[in-house]
Image (tube, rainbow, N blue to C red; front, side):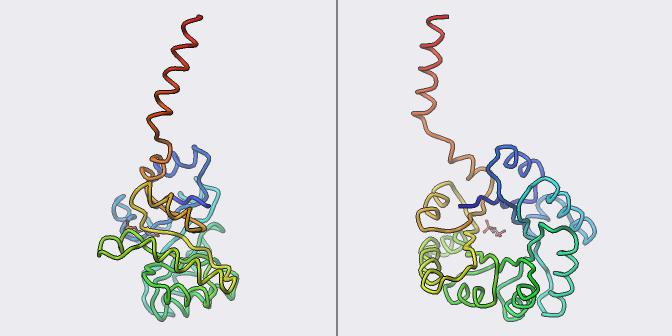
Length: 217
Ligand code: E4P
């Protein structure tokens, strides 16, 4: 399972990268705004800064909602760095743009996916990644994890190569459950990744080992 971090915060990206477990980064316009990164030039520079920290794929989202605009924006984003993946919304023109980029060998991430039908369309359009938003489904009393299972089933039936990128991860258990369901990638906040480290028996055990070692020294 690949681990992506879902943030535009450079310190958090560095921390995850330094841990040695990071495979990539996802961003979106809201995450950029949260870090105070506004204006096209600043946003583009920030993508390059992120690419220079991590080794893997970095999703950069278009803000156009029409095919021509998405192609124009996506091509400019792809020219920024070879780690950039064009993030496209799951709307009609987004599917069309996904097909356009995948035909040219440019990586894509189809975002804002909330149903198996949408995921099927993304795979048909040759998306590199499909991003089902599990936390946002949970927020409206719909089982987000169930969607991961449904997409896994459909993709396996036809050996689609599109990778399931479980997004809108809210906590550590989401990561575990997505791993059990066979999601190819998860993207979440640093806190949910670091949560995987925690177990009280590890802390108690280590304390005891160190105390016993110190008895003889
Ligand atoms: C995915 O690529 C999105 O950036 C993200 O996971 C959305 O998560 P949220 O629902 O916590 O905003």
